[in-house]
Image (cartoon, rainbow, N blue to C red; front, side, top):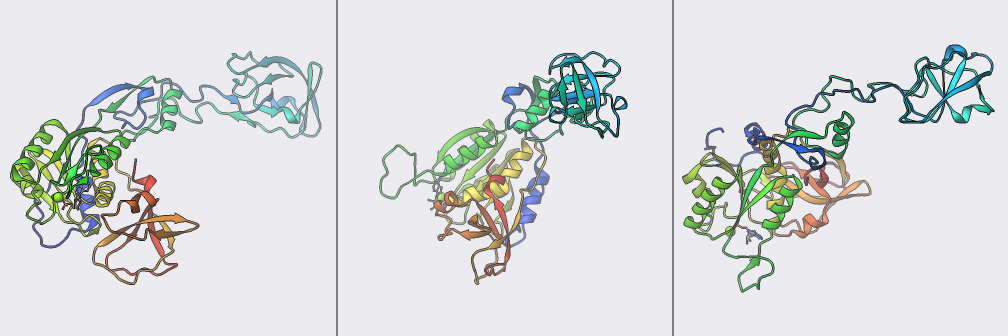
Length: 406
Ligand code: AMP
Ligand code: MG
């Protein structure tokens, strides 16, 4: 990790992100899991294909396999049907001057070089009549067209999607090497916090962040080590952080990371380890902190639930995925039309909760970081760079939540 950021002022978003991504090396061991349980896991070793996919040339149509040399190029040709090849049946070599009835997915017989779809063939008893102009290779899916034998099936570091599991299955693998699930400790700071299900006294609020983070981490296939709620004291914060460092690969906290005298997270991290970054030029989420507790990486997220969500998605998520062994992929950012106007420019980069609908983005009416309804309503974030005004019809960058929430 790099040394503490001593410069006055806020850290630009891109700088903060690139430092986090640079620091995020896989910290977890490799394990073998059955393919059925591998969705969402990060591939730790690239499997080599021991078979080609498909393993042999096969038909992409229901029709008739022929040798084009036996067909006239100018008039119709009549050939005897000498065999029938359903999918799953080994074919016989094609007899000269004959054709084979063949079905989709069935292996092409030796000696055939095209399949004519049944709609273009007329049948007369044991004979099939072919049109002129059949071309070599038509309706044949070539051996290895999907995966060549001996090649890597998938790249190491990818997060396995259902289509990837299909690829692995297609080369015959029933289990696969993945990184074990990253253990992420979460702790919620705040004397005002009460767990849902319990009565609420004056001055208290329910703990939302615990549920936001648990949901986000489970969506990433990570294991949550819930250290619970932490009182706003130096002693409780120190003890919770030390416990978290013992039990997990990485620590996430929410709240208590700002500048008030009830905010203990930053000073406790400095006591137990080191602080590498603090305060980002972003809105919401300015007080994000990054460092380590002992040797365990730590990210302190702000307390307002919308800030927790957004800073997790933008900064913690790529860092955690890196620790989990995943290769870094920037989220898809789409240029879209602004359906709103903002003449007041601010110095921080702003992430507005917006809906992209009917070709333009519209922001939620209340963009306060205390208003979580903005995030539930939105389908993504619009980025307003520092010191930038927005007019209706301007091109604005939009990140769909689908890019950030899993
Ligand atoms: P803090 O950064 O600790 O000053 O918190 C900022 C705001 O977020 C305060 O209004 C807190 O009450 C609120 N907050 C902090 N943690 C949570 C939480 N876990 N759930 C809901 N609100 C929270
Ligand atoms: Mg607090």
